Length: 422
Image: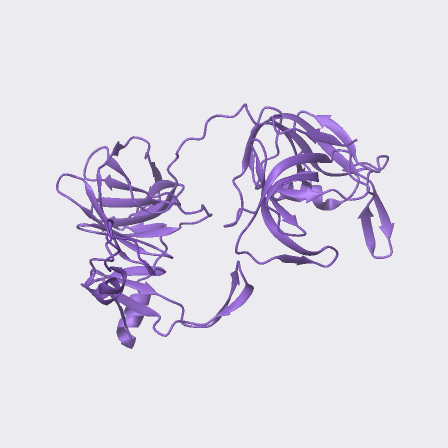
């Protein structure tokens, strides 16, 4: 039977493959649980599964990304497919924009890459174990299309799903996953939760950067309890990933914030406000040594996955180590002793040490490990909002751009000039 899901319906059927359950990235769902998972759309096979649906949604290609290639299906372009209260990844046989109608199944996935749409959130209203018949072939076993059996349960069984073997000798069906009915309306509102991604320490000042959002916390440990001030910065919101998207380097006046794309300077004023200025539109790995900020590049060729070109070779830059001078210019550093000293000072962005040797860890929350090994969480929820003074860059006032600005600024025709006879 094929079901049609109208855009107004707010219950969504999602198939969770057994290998996802075995991975434990998604806890075995039970009725009443709140589930959050990225989704991938899989087109219906022939014969189609009994739970195959027809979805009416909006498709948008993932612009700038090369297609994938499937030996059986040919080229496939990645899209974001969006419905009412959900979105998923979809590999289509040609770039498509706008309203579409597609038949298939929404699969729970583990992948949250830079091009992944937001995960779906829903309350589990129904759980059904999907059993499948398999048949022997000269090269192994394969599923028998259209042979699914759905068994309703209250909770997902705790079994090893990837065995591809029947659970009992007298039952030929192999459990391959669970089908969830998710209520998209019975979910709490999403809060703007601070997710600690990077940390840096200078004396009693702890600076903590959100993993992806432009939110910076200052933790003053000289006070009991620590006084925490939140600063909303004029930075881009980055796409979340498992680790930090920015690093922070504390000093007595404030901190540096670096990313793959830029460098910002944050100075803490006497009244507690923060002055923020972008000083560089280049980025990369960074380290502060003797008060100077260094950007570090690779020294050897390596292979890298590029979203536009696939796997490519990347050669090292001509000057792998550069320092930001007083004029806010990046100057190559070629002295071997300085290069070695700077590289030796590099550290993970999510771990730093205080002057007494205590270890500060930013991994979702903020924790401190004492010299004895005891770990204590820091409550970041009780905080006040600090003022931010943004110093926006003015490329037209930069003396280095004087010659360029002269070509851009020319007198236009006077508003009251008579029309030309030519």
